[in-house]
Length: 296
Image 1 (tube, rainbow, N blue to C red):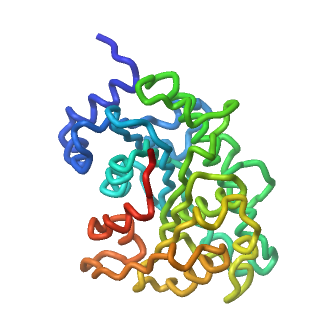
Image 2: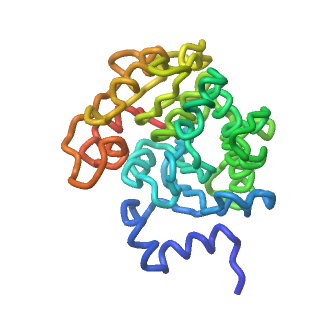
């Protein structure tokens, strides 16, 4: 017996013990899907681990919470308690699978940065849009974050009618006004970069990187005028992060209101890092709800 691809993926989640255990953070009424990037675009071969998709079919449809993991992040291993909270707030959720290695900070440093003070903005443009000639990473246009999101939304609109994914598309492109962009570390920086150039529903930057133009000088792109108004910007960091001071400096440059900046300070479990604690620690659920607002 044959099943539609997405239905089969859903069955895999509930029938395979390791997946069922991994996704126990989602209430049973939520629909949780995995979709391989190559199923949405046959040209994709790199970073082909599945995207994670979740929503509550019984809720009034709200906006899309679009999340980008940090360096080395795998979509299926993303912060599911945060995502479950987003769904409970009325959002559809996508945790995108994209090329996230090497990181900005691994490329735009030393001689590369000395030779090009715009290295970080050109890097992010390449990884997000894939439409410039930045040669220090080998990402292809079809690998770009926005291309992957677009192909996924088109795929879901055809294969998961219950999700009404057309609501997040306009003329075959992401309808940014219906999308809250977010991410952690490298992904948080990508969210900020997108929100500067597109009017998004909201931007939530979790410890979103520390791009430089030169030694001890944050990148110029942080000071660019944003299309998304500052009242829709939110940023977090953990006070124990080695780069906490720099992250706060970037938030100030981005114009994020002081009362929209969350310096998290709960104890970090032994062996874990403050840098990722903000998206993992359920102790921040009340703050997550404030950051998310009502999706619907």
